[in-house]
Length: 205
Image 1 (cartoon, rainbow, N blue to C red):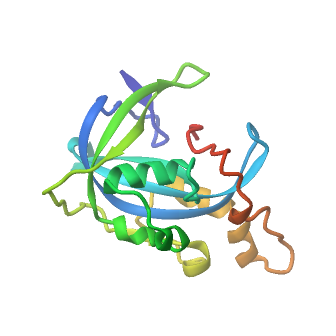
Image 2 (tube, one colour):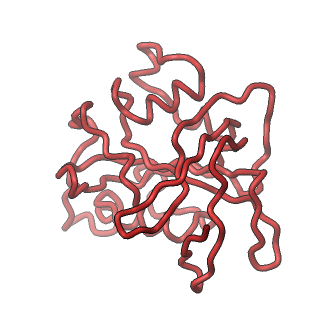
């Protein structure tokens, strides 16, 4: 089973479906994203995990495969980010954590990813993360440099180690445009206005 890649038309097998040990090496704020399907503007964050048992050779280097997941930046009771973090940490959020949970606390943390295969409307098959589970007693040092990026905190200083597709998502954000052209851009929406019943994180990009 193969899927297309943007690098020169290369094709790589999908990551095998099932449980995989993984380590979170990047947490990236991509700003406000508009969903045509839900007609909403929501602040998004992307988590990226390395999967040590799934390897690939790129430019002569043996590297771990990586898989990402987009989340609405919300800890509402129905939000996918909350569900995965609760499953990952094996405990619910305290009232204090609900008010101010630092995402960096899970950067570099190991987990089990339950990976499944899905099919887009155009027939393209892809691997996606269904659930994030706790992995006790193991630690992994990621091959990639760990990255914690926030648009307001880091601005134009986008880490060079991020994949190009993720850099492009950051640059599309109205918050990023506001930094580049503060006189002409108005942000599209605010995270605080998210309807907790709406979370479009599962829509594949």
